[in-house]
Length: 510
Image (tube, rainbow, N blue to C red; front, side, top):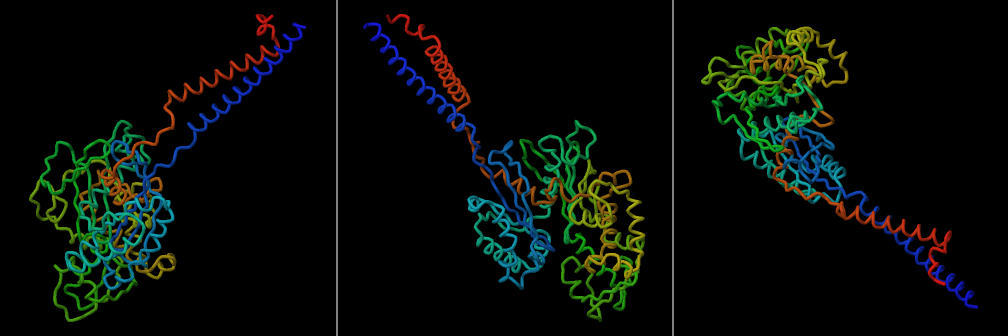
């Protein structure tokens, strides 16, 4: 009878122990899964966004950027998400259409609203930088320029972003921010392998210079040699990026962008004519009639102004590269210099150092002439190509390039020759240094220009956030995983003993 009672007691106890072990096993499995999923679930996106509007003389472009909220050496690692070109001319030509500014900007700003998550709209900073077109207008009519900028500010405030500023940036800022963009995209600041490597020495982290050519101005920016004496402090700018300080030389030549340079050339060429100008920078057979008021409406051409008995000038193309090159030389005054060395018009220029990235109109014109950003065209080779191109009849050219607007096509001879003249006569690139110039448009899907450098520099003023951390510390996570795993092992071992060798459990119960 007692044996029967003992057997029933053992079975009852075994059943209860198995239930407890099963429950413990289930709890341990659930705990392991819960801790693992909680610790390893994807972290919430911690991205900041920014928008920069490049309000140039000929058009306005909008660039959308993103960067991790946790900075690298106090500077955001910014990448370009998208860009949009506003349809129509630059804002400096919008004085008569101020009421249409919202419509003017709406398409591109709505694109930015679509690209940037709605939850980030209110904390996304927006900056507008107006360049040489507005600098010229401000010099000619400060009141009108202020009215346009006030209207632009009012318009941008209607969009659901955080407008941090809309202002006319200086030419020196424009040049320096372009320099930042090039060196950032080439990996020079972080000293990592560059995406677009000019340097053959893997141990060299020398920064590259920047050459920018717009419609109204051109900029040159580079780091001079360390032992150079900076003879013109106003041409030096200083930056702190990625944990390092940089001092760069920069100068912006207002009125020497390709559009204003052409107007200067025409204004100078009109002198001594009877209303007909035979211009070697235009193709044979090309004709254009321009109002005198359009030529002399800008302050860039005022120095050539004279009273003329005609209101229009007829331009007839002569198609001669060499004569075009000679006429453009006259725009650069190198007869005086109060420093040890100058570029032109008495402007200080240190000795050229390193490689240079040439972008904006530099690239667009050279691309048309079949040079890519990876090629370094020899100066004589480029001159020969231009010599042949400029000599081609206008009718022949129109048939070959039917898809290019005539006002653009007609000016490629001038623009290519002007670039050659500017680099040689203006900036003093010689046969020995010409191969240092690299023409570029984009690097890793980011446009080369001042706007990215502007965003990079501004991230120094945008507070960083603490990295998003895991729910558990690494040590706590490891402890919990080991603890619950040991519970599983113990439960399995006890269950095996109960099933296969119950005598070990009950040998003391008799």
